[in-house]
Amino acid sequence: MNSPDFETADIVIIGAGFSGMYAIHRLRDYKVVCFEAGDGVGGTWYWNRYPGARVDIESVEYSYGFDEELQQEWQWPEYFSAQPDLERYANHVADRFGLRKHIRFANPVEKLQFDEGENAWRVFTAKGDRVLCKYVIAATGSLTIPNIPPWPGRETFTGDIYHTARWPEEGVDFSGKRVGFIGTGSTGIQAMPIIAEQAEHLYVFQRTPAYCMPSGNRPLDAEHERDWKAHYAQRREQMLDTYGASLVDYGVRSAHECTPQEREAILEQAWHSKSAFQLLFAFSDVMTDAAANEIVCEFVRCKIRSIVKDPATAELLCPTTYPIGGKRLCIGNGYFEMFNRDNVTLVDVRSAPITEFYEAGLRTAAGEYELDAIVTATGFDAVTGAMSRMAIEGVGGNTLADKWAEGPTTYLGAMVAGFPNLFMIHGPATPGAQAQMITTGEWQVNWTADIIDDMERRGCARIDVTEASEAVWAEEVSMVSTQTVHQYADSWYNAKNIEGKKGGFMIYVGGFPRFRELCDAAVRDGYRGFTLA
Figure 1 (tube, one colour):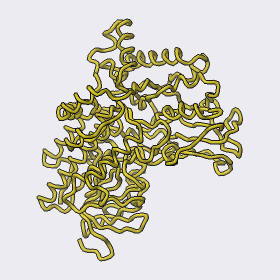
Figure 2: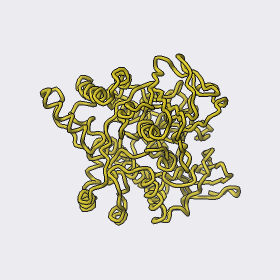
Figure 3: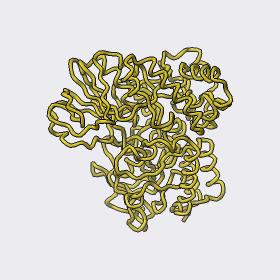
Figure 4: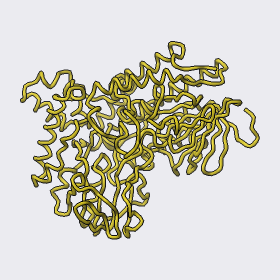
């Protein structure tokens, strides 16, 4: 590669979250440059500093497995780590393995342009960097670009507006304030109980109620930690062989095989378990059989009714329009109990939608709410958002925006036809957030790096995928989704969280072992579905 106006590198990595950091380490024998939009490492755990931010996978699992000394030396204080601990871990890894020298912070990539003559990518960044490289690895994350509420009048509101994914590093004090909180997904459920303890009054604007189970969080037991550290190698392999790359107790009996008393006992045990997602796997058919799923749904509704004292509020908090697990199950700490506080009001914006901001607060179809601060936990332009915001030009000047106009197309979630040498980690049509993302990200980085290593050994200039293989993969993604209850829920999994966005089903829900085998088989079978030049 020879272009005097451009710095040269072998590989550009986009994003310094957990997958991007591991990609830097795994590919350290190449000349690697990483561009990161934030001022620090950690990705999701750098940006999401809102009160109560916490992972919903056990800390001993939600961590790197590539270095045994790292696994043994690091100590997690709790079963489910809080954001500060996860960011501290990310910084420790960056320092321990000397990753920062490869990372250019506060410098997002704005444009990628494939040079067909050079078989290389021209990378343009916000700070003016220009890099010519053979490969690009986009580790941009599934939940990166915040979804900003579309209601008019935002600029007229005289109070403060916060988005949970761009929370001030110094924190926010809501003492004595009337706070409006929009969004009752995972983030809102974690943040609101803490804000309710500070605020003079908290108004919860709910469009869709959420299924939520207790977090089970507590200080990490020393014996539990010792056991994990003694068996890390076996546990990591076990994780890769489980549906979500996490060691949940998977039920082997159908809900229909159990008596009502047995079902109740099993669900009670799951509700109080230390595993955040145990409810979804309490029986073998919760995620595949609508009737079995409804048994679990009603169990959770009964829990809500038993916790929330006001019957009308309790019913508004009971989800009835979608199956449990159809959207990501929420994990909370005192969320339903919060509605028993005198300073918390639930506002139903499904029956009376929010219409606009105004100078003193929010208007709905039913009235006005005077507020001093508004918190928006309105989710993300998920899965495709970060890629779509870069101007990416592939072969023939074709753009990714045009290619994905009707929804994302990929092969194995890793590559897009017509965009050679561009790899994605946790891209569209991978398991994404349906599987534990550090472990599966590590695996995807290794799979990608092995391909790059093989390309270099062979002396290949270019690797691409065919549109026919994209179609085959789309059929696989669709086929497995229709075998689950996911098809009955509108969520960011199928782009229904953003008005006008086209996506289809964007997450692979066939389980990580099947995904892993299909990816390995494609390479093992002579790069089936790929084209090498």
